Length: 602
Image (cartoon, rainbow, N blue to C red):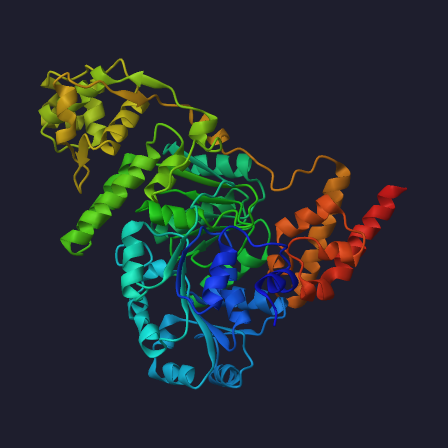
């Protein structure tokens, strides 16, 4: 019988397990249930794929997205694993053939959507088959408090009821304490062992900039930090997606839109191009990305504030899955907070859900206005302690602070005296003494606070008001009006002083996300070999009609560049090259390496 380690080495081509992988595999293979919380890129898939290969029968993987199934099956087939999927892209004849393979014991892994899994017909098929394990991927979809709720997931407890002797493993990359409790409850995993890995993604560099012509800020970021790299740009609305993609195309960036309003064939075509072509930027709503396996996404950019830190973590986690350097960049302003608050209030959801959504939005705002290390704030949200990372914008360019006590009192007094119903723009106009048409209409030029804030810049006032909202001294109504909260009383009474962040130069903040090369290429010789290895991969991928990373990821090519193997045996020792891939592609890549060696050995 093969061991877990031998499957890892010979099938998947990795020398050793990472983190808790070995313990998870051993537990599930021995018939134990498990809840696995592990960051994207941490190797969650191996935690159910290897137990499925160790146990008799077929592993059934519940997956929420068609794209994920296709990618996983393509990658497993390349490794010699008997994998298939059942979803709406198959015609009746193809689906019947796969069902027959399951009944005949000819499959190691079968990916299926929750909607199909729950049908009486499929449940009957499972009863007539030998099942190794059930894996429930993207398990946070079960949570009504979460960011990707899928109502079908709630019914997946039927697996425990109908197949009590088959081990189940639920996996997710993001879940706060509330979501974890709901996963356990909804999936009947009370007896499951919980494996909680660190949520830290040290290869991702986090940066946030104040919104000031966001398109130009994005273009600056793309051209200076990630020229020619593949990445995702998230926008809040379909209209914004379309406009941003079109504008990037006009600037010479290879960009495509993706949102639910596009027809299915266009969405599929754009996703396929993103997966298979180099240097492609996809501009999308958050409908895009869950389950995308592309490991060489070098950046994720947000042009709007996400609704929660879970959503933000999930979306930024799509960058740098291969462990190589990547960026998470965001531009935001107080208007984003107002828009999201308005969406919450008008959503029609129960008051309790609205309350939790408001708390999640407050935590998101607190991350944006953090005075120190962003990674610490992010990990603390997931109940994890961390030291300053040295790799976010605030660590690389620590913000200056100033004694803002007097300025804050001026702002709070202005909000109060103007009636606690006007937005930040009007409050700042009062502080700066601007006689606008609205000012004359309201008569606010006669307020005692009119013009008392001329010693502070408009940009600093904007930042100050955002920080007051983030620290819950000032509230924002659903229509954007500012009002005082109880926490500001101590400042107004003179009982508390306030140190706030001073506004930084945008370009300096952006440079904190400056180019960190995926692979350091110091010489023409290294650049030549890197290009040759990538060209070999591209040619083989086109022959196989699969994305290039399914052949080998950048991390594997990087190891080839570093180690320069000159034999198949040496090539087999490279991480990511298992037996089947060595047999399929070893001679092609070895030829490239040997030819390069001969040329440069002369």
